Image 1 (spheres, rainbow, N blue to C red):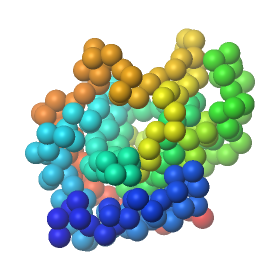
Image 2: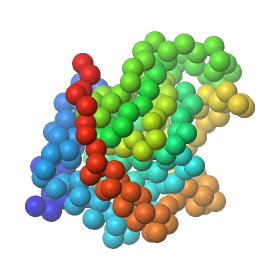
Image 3: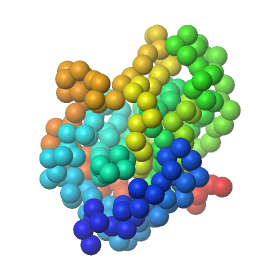
Image 4: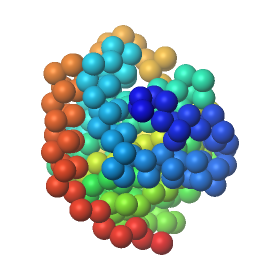
Length: 226
């Protein structure tokens, strides 16, 4: 079966992206299909390696790569795969879209601080106290509304899947402890220079895919936490 016509990918239009219950309910069959022996994940990686539409969406940062495995234009949703390198952590932030995530390999410490209407550019990140903190391990899944403020501190070579919905806003806030907090924007609102600085080259995409295949082949998922 062609990867783009897999039943789990065809059901994305039924998700209510403002309802985390609906999001997780519909994301689980997709995550199950990507982690079983159906060959969906290898097929999507094969497609990405030669797809001129998906490759420019892939992004490279100092401590992680973001690969776009599927772009559903009808539902305005995307399936991404994140590869974390040593030293990865992010700053407390919200998102422009709601999403569901599944850990394929490794683990990360996940902290949730509250709703974004409780924070602003003048919020001191050093005063933030998590209201929820847990270690997300291989096999665990969760959904997060776009109004949530959270952060992730990942173990090296962790790999996660992320199913994101349509943008609910143009920008999101990053609370920075090392400097002033700032707003970040989606690709449609970025300058050509900013966009080019994070776009992965074809060689980088191929290198990341090879690394992901190698890591997944040696992964041994732990039981999901309740």
